[in-house]
Amino acid sequence: QVQLVESGGGLVQPGGSLRLSCAASGSFFSIYAMEWYRQAPGKQRELVATITSGGRTNYADSMKGRFTISRDNAKNTVYLQMNGLKPEDTAVYYCKVDYSDYSQRGFASWGQGTQVTVSS
Image (cartoon, rainbow, N blue to C red; front, side, top):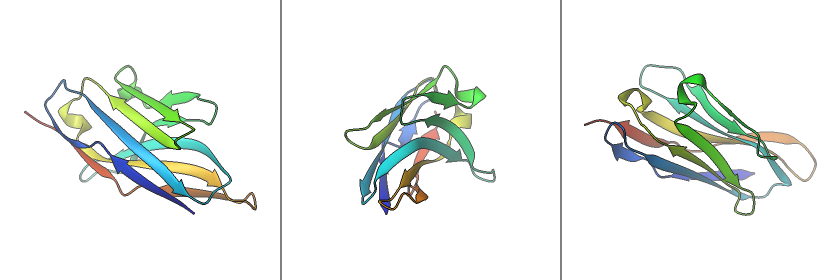
C-alpha cells in the first residue's frame, strides 16, 4: 500500500507562485502515472495535470503555460510548480498515484490534500 504526503500549499497573492510536493512511501512494485487534482468549494474535483512514468505530461487547458508537473522517480515524489496564480486557482489540491503491488495488481492512492488560497 502507498501512502502519500503532500506539502507546499498556503496563501499567495495573485500572480504569485507555489510549489506543491507529494511523496509516496510504502510497499509497492512500481509507480505509474502521478497526477494532481484540485477541488474548489462547491465544485467537483478536477484533473490538473498528469505525468507518466516516462515523463510524458498532460495539463488541463486552464493550467497550460502556468503549471508544470514533474517527478523524481528516485524519491517517488511528484511536484506541481504553479506560476501566475489566480484567485480561481484557490482549491484543495490532491495528488493521486497509480501503482502496482508485487502481485502486479493495480491500485490508486490519494493524498490528504493541501489548501492553496490565492488572495490579496
